[in-house]
Image (cartoon, rainbow, N blue to C red):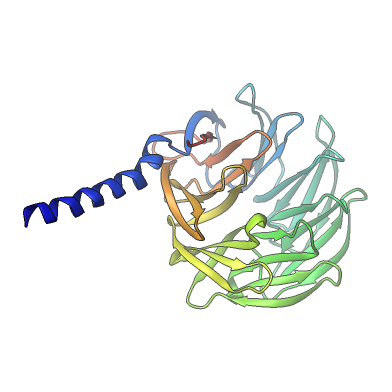
Length: 333
């Protein structure tokens, strides 16, 4: 009787050890450094990067400023001022232009060249938020107002169109090889699918019993749209063509950014809970392989495949000043 029990128990222990060992022995993210942001108070929103000049732009919403960080020197080299709750930031390398979207007055500001000289301002009608760039067309899309995506000619810096939505858009992503735009519209309880050619919504994917869908990422190799919901905290995988839900995975709380590390097959979910969840897909199933500590309230970030780094914006809290935490992905074996 005893020998019958020992063998199954040994097999079970071996299975658990093998499944846990890769994550335990090869932590997928390691904290490389913390770059102090100086006297920055309140909430920090999105980030953008100038890869060629190795500069990181940080929307310091609570400060009404944008920090310019030298990644190599690991310090703030400049601070742009005069904003009204800067939320979205994006950098177009072709024209060396930085775009800043303001939530307070709805203004989109542009700065160009090595010295970031002011180009001009566009009034987008309130609550200008996330920015995405169509580099092929040199157009940018900005979520704004009570429900629209503004389309901007990036070279001329003028508004050339708009796409109506049912409510204010949060994170959205432009399809790389096609004309679709996938948009989180949490107040309408849906993911909206937009055609860039016609500037119209062509589909609506209901969120069912899930709420507060803010972050989104595209996993093009697997033909899926990844959407993080906060209530309850789940990462939902939609089929990019049909909108069918493929799977739901429990994640950390208060997520505000999601990134796909295509090189390693990782998904990074950045949460205000003060952690980064690292997920991976294997055999058609996605699961969490690690939970990495960051800082409470640090829910916005940027993953740069070119620099192979995850930059996490940590607001001032608990006696520690605001900083950008730089995580280096680690290859497993």
